[in-house]
Image (cartoon, rainbow, N blue to C red; front, side, top):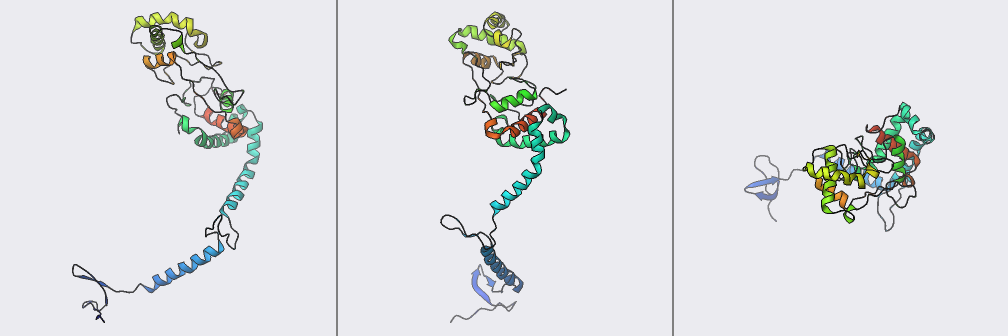
Length: 290
């Protein structure tokens, strides 16, 4: 039998492990620590008996108390729904204008709409509703289909060019690349650029003016300020959905991009769509209710 080694300074037996001449003392664990450890083992066994714990083939042990986190969540959500029933009913029944004018309804609808926006809308419009190229910024006052709260509600409800909804908003810009020459398209692009900023070639822009009147004014207006009844954008401001350079404008004239937005009414229900409309309205770019 190997003789046990006792440390000379402490008088404590060592474990037999040694690193670079340093020996490890074989000190026992503190009694309070051991008792605590044993208590946690007993508590763990009791917990797994009382609550759902052990996975089975297709389910898990139920626990003798019959507790369920899903059941608790369902009960809690039911209580929340009951507490909100009256205000949800008011949001469903009142006009959007009256909701905005009622401070308590407005605050509730805005908060609920913001939550719904973060779940359903940020993927395209961004967390701050600032938009991305091809996806409109909802904070500014530039609206393709109108900026009243009713217009916003209509757009959210039925979407844009969403074929599954018969009431969706529909407009389509022709591909002028099939009708006009490259030089004519560049002239129109230069003229359109001149409406909101200096074109790179004033002479080309002047040549494109009549082409714009002949081909584009029926939707965008002779002054280029657009027409919200048909979703034709305002070309006079400095807000561009697909790029602001003359090359970007020419590309859109040649072969236009047409965005699609889902219709949310069937998916989310009328109350949530109303709340979304109130939230978008609250961002500040909509036409204010008098």
